[in-house]
Image (cartoon, rainbow, N blue to C red; front, side, top):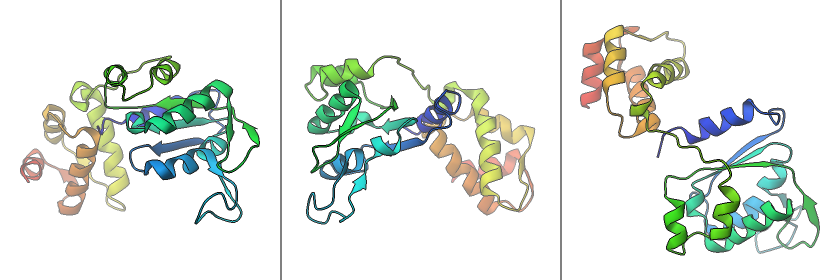
Length: 216
């Protein structure tokens, strides 16, 4: 969790032949299962109570010619797993409440912090969907195993979060960041940098100041 899976997926998209197409990301754990179907596949007007009269395109349609990133795929309920499998097999979607088949041309990048093979054994994840998705398996190591990335992320977050101030890290402060275990991965690093930006009185971040920030 927090290891930068979406950043990695975005990089795959940006350096592919689909780079000119859309990159669409959805966290499967953040949307209730009863709403996820309409979010992914879309719906026609009046398909259900509260549905827009104009209908709505689903994320598969929106990602057409590009990449759809399905984060936390292990949280997808069994029913929507079956619907996803059908889209992957047929390369087409049908909006909720419609009988019209809409072809889609997309790359699927799915991410999880769970062991899907174990979930298949426990009947919590469809075996056929697992093998359909598991074409190329990429492991994103925790941040503590990617020490060269720590300085890059820290510099990027400083530029993003310090606004008009030009905050920089001293060599000692950078050494502390690189040596820290980062149990919360990139998300924790971003929070630390945001704390630095809020508390720093000098533009050069010293090792002593960073040490105090990490203690809090």
